[in-house]
Image (tube, rainbow, N blue to C red; front, side):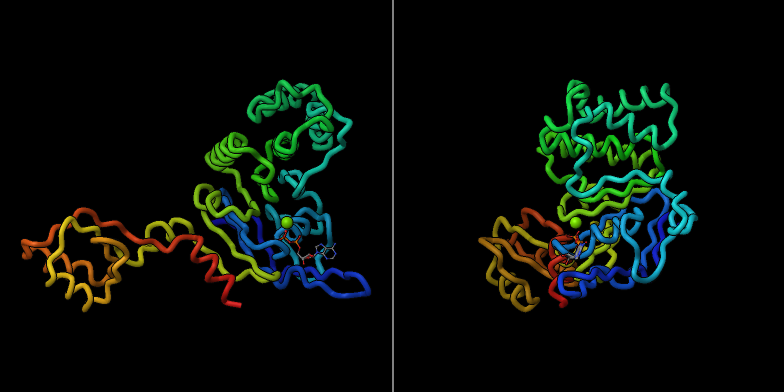
Length: 304
Ligand SMILES: Nc1ncnc2c1ncn2[C@@H]1O[C@H](COP(=O)(O)OP(=O)(O)O)[C@@H](O)[C@H]1O
Ligand SMILES: [Mg+2]
C-alpha cells in the first residue's frame, strides 16, 4: 500500500485576539492510502478545516510536515494532482458557472478543447448545464456547492480534498454527490473529505479518523465496524416459557420489549440449545446488534 497523503506531526497554532493562542491542530500523523476514501469526522471547531487548509497550502504549519503524491508540502507542484472544495465556497460570483470552470481549468494548463469537453461533462453530471450561462451570484446554496465540486474536478485530479462536500445540498443534490464520489472511487481516485454526517461516512468511506480539539483520537475501518462490530443479538420470540425466561435472566439478557430480549454474543449458541428442546418457546427472529458509528463517535468524544 502506498500513502498518497502523509502528515508527520503536523500542527497549527493560530494567534488569536490579544495574542491568545489557539492550538487548532496538534501533531497530526496520518496516512491516506491511494484509492481510499478517508473521512475526517469531528465536532465544530475540531480542526478539520485547519488540516485541509494546511494540506492545500493556504495556511502554514507551526510544526511538522506533509507529503502529497510523493512531493513535499513546501513544493507546490503537488497541487496539480489535487482538486479542492473549500468549506462554504464562494467564488468570483460575477462569473458564470461555465466561466469559473474555464478560469480554473486554464490555471491548471488545460487546452481549450480539453477544457470545453470536460466542463460540458461536469456541468451535466452536476445538473448545472441549464444554469451554466448565469452568474454564480444568482445560484442557490446547493448550486454553489455543486459548481464548487465541478471546479475541484475540472482537471481530473487523482486526489480530492473536500471540506464538507454535502453541506448546503438538498436531498437530490446529496444523492448526486454521493454517486459522484462513489464513481470517483471506482476510478481509483483518493478522496479525503471532512464531514459531520455519520451516514455519509458509512456509505462512502473506507476509513474514518475522529478528531476532537485538534487531536486525532481514533481511526476506524468501516468494513470492520460493519462486520466485526457485533456486540450481541436481539431475539424476538413468538412465545416463551417461564423456564426460558429464567435462563435468560441467568444469562444476563435484558428484556427490551414484549417477547423481546438482547443476549450477549457468547450466550447465543447456548441459549439456542436450550430453546430447541422447549416446546413452549418459539423464536420468531434473531437480529445482530451492532456498535454503530454513532455510538463509537459518542464514546470517542466522551473520552475527554
Ligand atoms: N484564522 C483563525 N484564527 C484564530 N483561530 C482560528 C482561525 N481559524 C480557525 N480557528 C480556530 O481553530 C479551531 C479549529 O477550527 P476549524 O479547523 O475551522 O474547525 P472545523 O473545521 O473542524 O470546524 C477552532 O477553535 C477555530 O475557532
Ligand atoms: Mg470546518
